[in-house]
Length: 372
Image 1 (cartoon, rainbow, N blue to C red):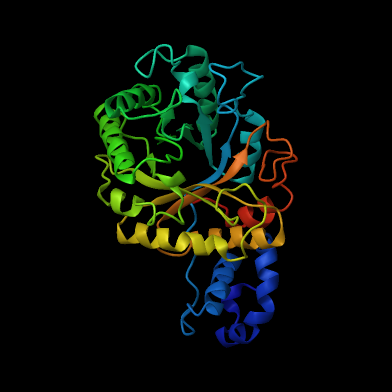
Image 2: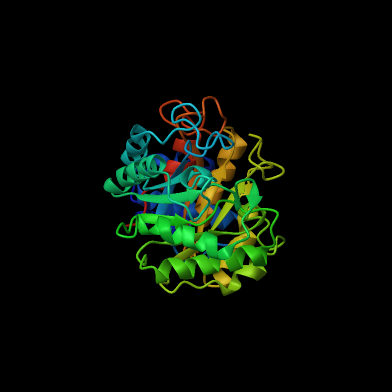
């Protein structure tokens, strides 16, 4: 294993592939980039996809790789809520921990009702204290050279009602985008997990918002859009999203489709038991084909699972699949870090979140570094 891989005769590799396979899959994080090439080749070879007469292709590293930093959306019925009691902003020490490992992207959920109190509505002024909290953590993230997704975590609801006023929603986003339009490391995540709304309605509202943001002069930030049915990758076609979003356009040509995927039986992320060790790949396959066919880029904005051998293999398999040559996926974000998760089974908050001991080193770190 210490011999440079490309110096090993190809025929010898073929004869030894099976015996090396299990060792590589569990220990790949200890090896250099050449081993990642080998790891992908082994995976593909036993799936019948490798060309026996060609060397393995290099993997395609993620541009965006990191975690959601949850907290500011907590206490979702307490408006405006009390900082430190109902909600909390991400800890800078958590950002330091992950950037120190090489991760570069942080999704920051927050509530629209705290940013725009219902008493004055979406058209009213932003709450200056809450806006300052968001701006402070965003500037901290981007000041370290990382990317910050700002995420109104509202499921296309505001003040306990489905958002139906496209003009009001677009104007709200224009106002928010104006706070960050000089910072190209901010990513606009227009709305978290719409549900119970027809895909065509979600698409129309988000397309109008993309157009309004660009017309306002915020042109250097990436925008990500999410579909209905909790933007599930595995239901992207059956939910109607595939048909509705084929016409998505961005005047700045800097947009991606954000999907989410959990690996338990109902895809809700409420159980730490994964269906099987290939469920990560299985649930991304259809969405990946759609992204490629329609020339879109994708971002897996949420993925999570339990810390057990089956789930570790399922998550690792999904990461490897998303980094195949020619992949449309720009990256992935684990759900979730955040200072108030406690013993939550998917918490990756340092130093002792449940996903830190196994998921992080075995299923996520092997897929670093990010691309430049």
